[in-house]
Length: 156
Image (cartoon, rainbow, N blue to C red; front, side, top):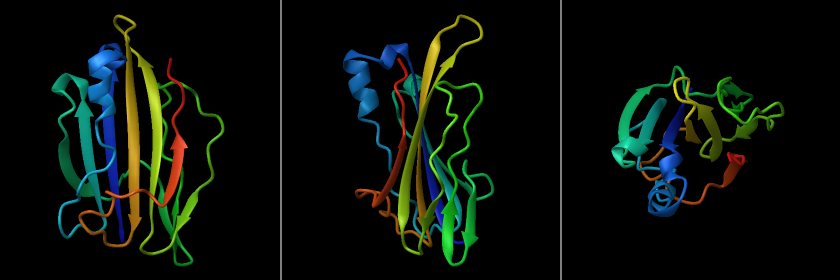
């Protein structure tokens, strides 16, 4: 399968829920330049509050992109991203799968709130999946996504 997935993870705590820290968190990008010549790969980008939202990047095989991708009748079927059973809010109803033609791309966003097991402190996570069907140019995800699924919910 010829597809490129860029999975962008942003993680924060109560500290970044308001004021200057929230401004810094909200400025964290949801799409990045891809490494040159990327084909059939997962480009992971992670940003943590504890590291001032500095992006950490790595390229992996497209074995576990966080969503199910299947080629059917010349189209790429993108199922909703996997959800964790430990995060809130619960998502009992999910959007339908999206089908992409070669050369098309999609951005899918989903967020979570977690409760810590030791002190009960909350932490938060935003996952953004940028998915391109075919070999992607480095700047493929830097524009406005032509297709978008927004599963972000109020996290309190």
